[in-house]
Length: 487
Image 1: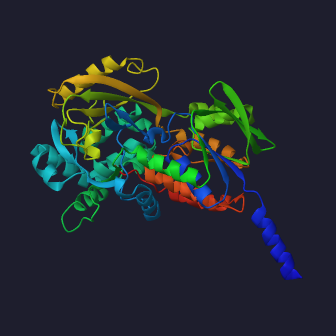
Image 2: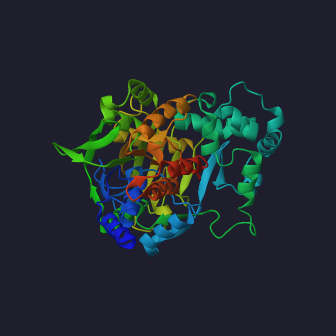
Image 3: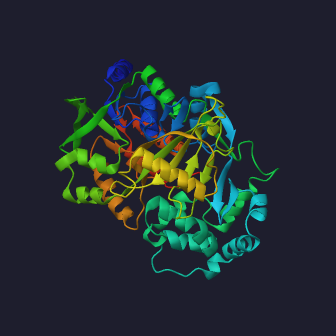
């Protein structure tokens, strides 16, 4: 009798409807979660993406026959083995293993990136190179002991004044729009993988023959642009039963009795209300709180409004030449050149097509309201060409055209007060039943694509039999704190 009752309960459990989960945002984190939830049969998934394509900032598009990304993107060999294996299975032979071949402009000299000992020894002025290493070796002894720890104090104590003032401080000022002492120390630990001399030397030594692995100094890149990863994830999620809707913007989230009830979606001119059991958001925290409206307490809305994201203008030049340079990326730390990085997409994919044309993508950190933001494409294209000349880069190729893309939420800004504000938001979100936030924008995290996918996999792992395990999620959140951006 007991066995029969247990069997009946198992059958009842097996036919229990799966929870209806709305995933907000079609970048790698959202797509990864939709795929895992659908593949494992844990939820009925509807994913809503406001844009016309999946991928978010990690999408790709075609321009004049060249596949372009929204800035420079790579899949790092440091990816979790499970995630890397899944991506390899999804892309097959279209996932290429490519050598890193970039350059950093330092003291009017170009040095290879990733750093190579021979370059540091031969390409930098002798006195400057000596100062770099002596300064770094004695940094802990010479650095002032600050009353309040900042990004600047962490790096000064780890790398010394020469490296900081010649590279990291101006570069970070350019990226974030804030000085080193206005940025949180967390940024140094999460964003700078070589934040001390031992860490920096370890990175350099790993490039030496006999010490490097098969993937040292290499990266994975899809043949048809970085966005192919998101496109294959989307296809796999659909095949597993997920419903992915494009051009569907989240206008509102209904929260009643401290539980998510429904969402409002704007699809064209129509507003549609969709009942859900859970909302898994990868949207910027500011957007999520705004969608919740008055359901979010005033203190939460105030904290959200104070959170800052750094914007980016991507300036593209279509040049009438097969190849601009042999390098995949150039980095510009000096403030006199406003762009932070220049990439040539054809070099990432080792593509010779189309003949006679290549595209450059320059990353210009800028926020809405800044002087560069309203400039038209031609003006920004001309400015970029002048900056390239100032850096000593070629100006011989004819420009076919210039165009731009603008990313208002490129990076979260870790100012000195962000952790207090984030804690306010995090506490409220964690207390709403059925509401989860993750991904770069959702957890206000500096990360790579493999980190975003790790969050997605972790979130899916926490849902079991329709119940989200918050204790397990807390343990995963502790792991996320150890993520360090791979340059």
